[in-house]
Amino acid sequence: MVEFHPARLRNFDAEDKNAIVHLGDTERGEPVEIDRAVIESDLVIYVDSIQIPLNGGHKSVAVGLGTYRSIASHHAPQMTAESPHVMQPDGSHMHQMIERLSRVIEKRARIMVSRRR
Image 1 (tube, rainbow, N blue to C red):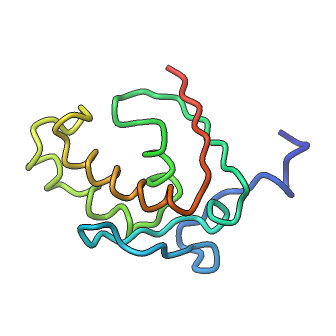
Image 2: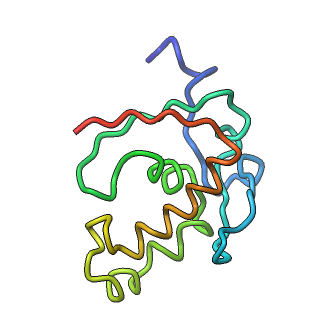
């Protein structure tokens, strides 16, 4: 990892206003904010280790490289109270909301996802 730091490896600071881009809202009015580097990169290569069905893939980009404003709606107690299948993609309100965020991001960014189980 030494050959990547500091020029090509950095931490994402979700509170650094200069590092955030507001992409707009989903069709349901949910704000979509993401790390500026995702939008400015030619290609984002995202590697993730999946531990539960909601982890991994483009969803991790929307959550892991998003801001509190973007994730507050779906990382809230009512998501588990209103959805009987919060840990299962089918029927999960949380999963559906993250899908909407991801669709907005994917219109502006090229993301290659590697999943490892």
